[in-house]
Image (cartoon, rainbow, N blue to C red; front, side, top):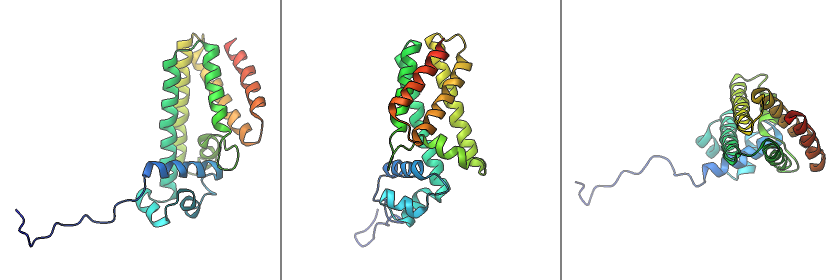
Length: 199
């Protein structure tokens, strides 16, 4: 038992004064806009409102923060696909929900349509960084598997092949959104492709 003259040891370091998940969400948006290579720690400090030393203490270097942002995106994608699967839509309605939901997300961004962080930033960085390449491969495999599950459930005669085609269309829509194509044009592409895939 401590006497009145003893002091309680103070915890080492200062407690964080920010919500790490909210900070990571803001960092993800900055990476989505500018990409991995073109985003500096100063950019991330500006986007998150947290100074560089605090960011480094919480997340590590820029690459560690980027990989954490990709992991966050992966969790969001997994939850979104699980919601789509749980809805148990027929194939035409499933495609509509999948593609329009993706298009609406791709058209958001800090300063204009930023597309998908995975396709528009990780695909570029993966060429020279094995850790980012591994994270990209993991997310693409998840995407293929979840779309395949939704398609098999919806009665597709070739769920694996159709899932790869649908995933490839998502990637193209992301690039086209970032290039400035309108929502109407993107939806038209999605409708045409859906009709071909669904037969």
